Structure formats: structure tokens, C-alpha cells
Amino acid sequence: MRTVHRVVSLFVVLFTLYLGITGTLMQIVDLRTLYSHAPATNPNMRAIREGFDGPDGFASSRRRTTLRPYFPRASTIRRPCSA
Image 1 (cartoon, rainbow, N blue to C red):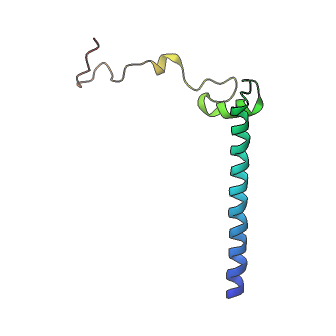
Image 2 (image 1 turned 45 degrees about the horizontal axis):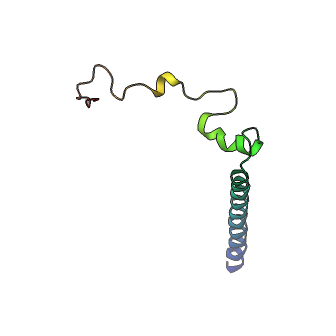
Image 3 (image 1 turned 90 degrees about the horizontal axis):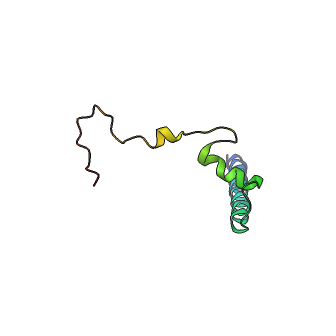
């Protein structure tokens, strides 16, 4: 039983190291892209920005929906006064 535990723990340690190393490498690539002031057309910069507004050619939010009032018109909640 001890041998099985050692073999399983070896695979767990190797997998954990793999996750740590690949995550660190991805962060290094992102930081190098940001600190080198890469243009917006750089593939790494496009990959970083993709999470904010969706992939190229797809708008995930429209101006009309992001500028809507916080409360619906039929709301009974008192709206704050805009002075």
C-alpha cells in the first residue's frame, strides 16, 4: 500500500508542478507584453483584451444597455436626486 501511495503522490506532485510552471510562464508572457507597451495588434495584447469585450468581430455589450438607468421605470424605489 505504501508503494501505491508513493506512485499516486508522485503523479500529483508532477501535475501540480506542471500547473504552477505553465501558469507562471503565461503570466511572464503577459507581463512582458504589458511592460513592452505592445501595440493593440499584437497577438498577446489581443488575447489579454479578449476577456473584456469578447473575441474580434463580436461586441459583448452595447452602448444602449450599459447606459441604462439603474432602476426600471415602474420601480417603487425612490431614485436618488441628480443635482
